[in-house]
Length: 111
Length: 112
Image (cartoon, rainbow over all chains, first blue to last red; front, top):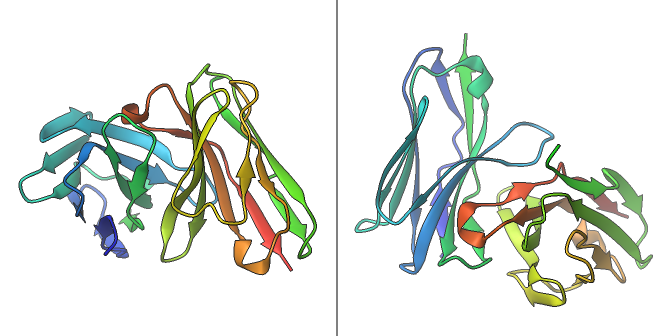
């Protein structure tokens, strides 16, 4: 079983829609959770990181972690065509170096 | 500009010919790491380093070597590349692990 599971999509939404991206994980030792955005032919770019359970908001993006169900979510409000990318979730054991990534969800926002 | 710089961006080589992919960061980060990205498998960690002269294996270290002689540099060495090492490679750095990595732009390696 993979440490982090993510539906690959693709997901296609109209501009302005609310997007919900989700991951599940299996390792109870994960304490930090991240969301990355990756444009085609580019390296992943850190969007948000959260510690333990709870919500974190940054502009149009909200990250949510539910450790009881081992569920990670990213919500994008008022989605824009520039949000079209692959979104990767990741979990980290403690403050160490070992990150485990999902395979990514491809998102297209249609103007 | 704060960044992680990898070179080369593209590399085609033949089986068995030793190669090195360089990685340098200008953010004075303690942590550095190498990942490979393959379709359907996502990002998998090859090696990581928590400081100078401190390195450890990630999930897929076979066939790779690394060294961390200086804080800013973390080269990836393939002593005898094989076709199954054809992949997109990313170097990344972080001040501490829990705050996420800054990734380089990637090196697309093809081994024929």
